[in-house]
Image 1 (spheres, rainbow, N blue to C red):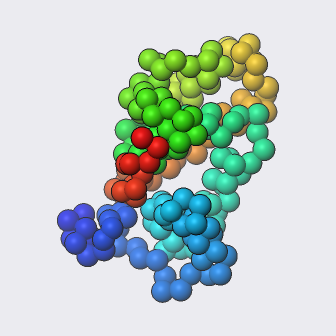
Image 2 (tube, rainbow, N blue to C red):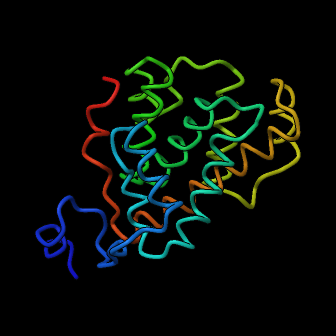
Image 3 (cartoon, one colour):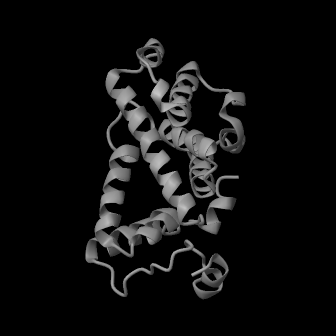
Length: 197
């Protein structure tokens, strides 16, 4: 089904593929969607996109929750900043919109959210954050060039080896997510555009 057909067929537009949610969601998925609606005021379209196969959705949710909400030396804001910096390189409209809103919300700084989307290098960041984002961007643009010096640069600004693994895992996850979102023309929920401005 073409994007134009899908837009008129299934508002709001989630993605270009005609893969609808099942008529009945499993109890655990329904509970998760209800929690999203309660906490966020919406069910993110990325979850709706995966819902055609609830096993795929569970795997996605579990990995996301562990990476973005699990115990880490990285703050939630830092993980969202990585998501935005990687998504900027990949020009992923869905992730730039959704995670740009999260950066605005978590930082309390709408300008930072916009700077992160457009060019993190011009943002007023701590050296730790600048190094973290440089690592994530290099990993996105030139993964074969990653070296011990890149890891040492992160240690030098206070990251542990566990933190470095988390930076790499978050960056890797968003490189995958960006590519899937772009391939299926996933659209962000319209509500993201107005959040935390």
